[in-house]
Amino acid sequence: MISGTSKTHMIAGQYVPGGFEQITVSNSVKTLTESKYVKDNFYAKKALITIESAQVRWTIDGTTPTSSIGHLNNPFDSITLIGTANIKGFKIIRAGATNAKISVTYSF
Image 1: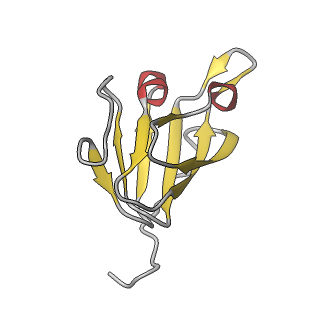
Image 2: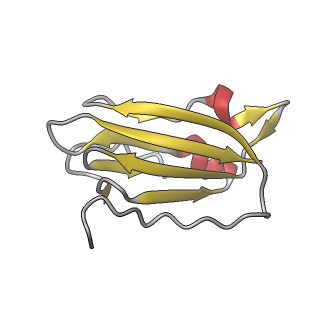
């Protein structure tokens, strides 16, 4: 893979984008912002997350991720969460000493 190349794939039409946020991922566990994935009392059905600048670890099952526990993703990777329970349960932390940034688009 060429450095800096994104592997993000978009499928349009199934859901309507309706919220966006960027989160700095540090050495404390972060979750997604409820006010961003709830719109007019409707919960997002899908979240597209792209990783920028550093490795992260994440979970969706209630487990708290650490720098060595959880799914590992690298910069330029993307994560697609399908279903409100997965969006609500998402937790993320940086994997190393460098903070990461994630960009999230929610679809309804």
